Length: 156
Image 1 (cartoon, one colour):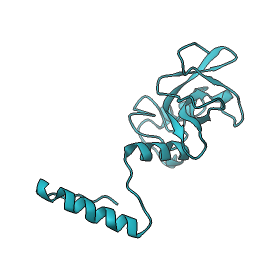
Image 2 (tube, helix red, strand yellow):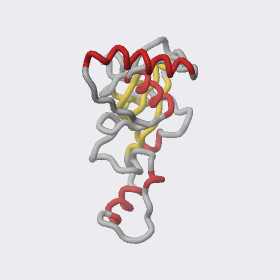
Image 3 (cartoon, rainbow, N blue to C red):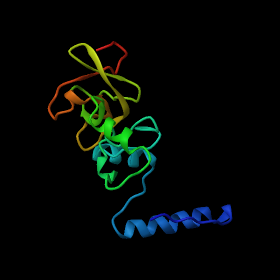
């Protein structure tokens, strides 16, 4: 649910306090975009423009459930070819080391070879570890596969 309030800036403090009181009555607390971002990463949810853009397809982004292949549509043949292509796939990563924070653009390695890229990263307050979302070669996408994220710019 999204609410928009248009009013005079003199009312901002009063409106904020009223909203905060209402949220506290139901056991909530205020949070910002950082909290939202961490929660979506813990859930494995893509953020448009950050985790994907028009250069990625639903099969790469692990959201193929949005594709209805019944009937014809423009681009169906190309999309079906992509479905079976040996491409990268969107996955989540949990860091096992200390409290390193993976960041977008950092490379993912397996056995010294570059195999993917981080698109989002943060510290998970629930896990107490770094977490990341990104793309990795499909053959390395199985849970439990160990990879290295280059968080310090030291290639692998």
